[in-house]
Image (cartoon, rainbow over all chains, first blue to last red; front, side):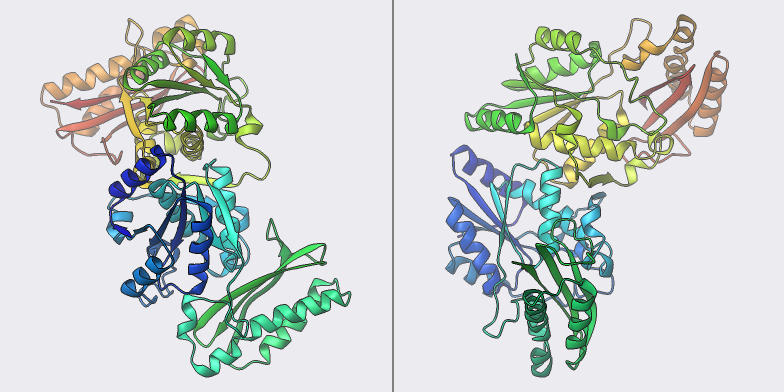
Length: 281
Length: 281
């Protein structure tokens, strides 16, 4: 497994691979890899000749009051995991390599960033869009793999890729979960045992919505209120949003149709967790 | 010469060329080709195996009160000229092919778009940036050629290309002029004979600044006031801006240094003309 630290070296490596007729799958990560990331890598590996993984905690997608500085990092562990799962190249740039002095370009996907995490985290998806645009131009992949846990992020990236005519296939991979249903996340390590227990309210909320839908409930407000009551019954929780929305535009719906996205963001203690499920027949 | 109308076909063509080891030079245009465009094409042709020219009047770079609808078009003439100069492929997409329903991504280069034409034409450079980003992803060139007449546009595109790590060499080509010094522009055709005469105030302004600089003048205000007086002496003119600025940041300077950009925008009759010169030893 090769470790590449500069933009220039990565571009030359990818260009040589493409010229040799090799296909490239790409998994961008912020490191602190867990089973969810490894699953993205396995999917990438299965679809291409070469698997490139990036590890970069992207400062531009963190708000001023967010956890950029304390975001968990474990470079040695990450490299071992990436190697074990068969990554061919790890792109591991320094912050200054990605954002040198004079940097001043924004990439903004407009409508699908307005709701859900876009409301709670202003500027977050601009940061995601710009770093992914950069990484795509650096790694030059044929396909890129993202987790469906970050449903809105996947939507933003799919939209940007289509709008800017990036010739890259975007592959979404179902969320990997702990045995009790908690979605894998690097931030789960922040939870103490009591909070870890309360964190199950997300999975339970999705089960509840699914059950209500199966029993014929179509009123979004009724479902949302039931979920809010369920979450509020769990200690240490504070709801950021409970949204029932169109799975493409991410705009709130009043009634559940053939396919509705339930998206949740809940603070458990100091840790913000997100999850989602498509509710459909 | 091949004419390609869809994004998909252009991407497949370029990908095949790259896989075959061919280099691609790209000249994006809005058509109504003149000698300035042809010079860009010759430069592109000299630097690569394949020359791709795009013809697309980009709606997103025109303001609501600007001349999108009446912007001059001459497809048959353009194709003949491109063929004569040796273009291999003309990419000629419809508006809906470039901006289908649901399009919602913006690309914004921040600081270098604030002054000069950025002030007079709000949103203009966002439109330029997004269409060039799209065209780069569609045509996949190794190098792209732009005229120095649109100095700020060249700066914006160079900055975007660097910031987003687009692996494309940006080549700037000196302005091609009429025998009397008027910069070639598709908009020159709007000028009636009297206005055409007044339009020479731009070239004369640059000569005046150059002379004052050679004679030791370093005060930007003095140079600017002399130019404004000169332009105002020409009938049918209205100054949009006369700027002496840093050639990289495009920020106004108080004193002329080793290299200062003089940038001009003047309305002559109803036609807005721009020109620029680097004033240096």
